[in-house]
Image (cartoon, rainbow, N blue to C red):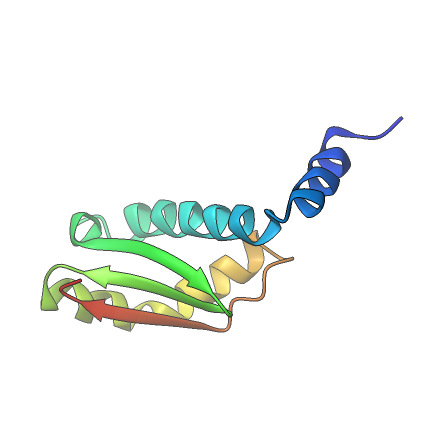
Length: 97
C-alpha cells in the first residue's frame, strides 16, 4: 500500500503540477521565516514567485528591502534546509512591485 505522500507526488507529476506545488511550499516557508525573523518588516515583504531557482520577494519600502537583503543568506540556507528537494539558487528583491 502506498503512503499518502507518494500518492500525492505521483498525482502532481501526472497532472504537471509539481513545480506549482513546490513554488507554493517555498513561498509559504519564506513567509513564515520572514514573520519570525523580520517581524518589523514582514508586512512590507511579499514573496511573489519562484521560477528557475529564483525566489522573488517584492518590497513595499526601501528600509524593508535593506533589512531583508542583509538576511538573504540566512533565508536561503533555511529554505534549502526545510525544502531539500527544491533547488533554490537565488533570492531577488523587487522594489515597489
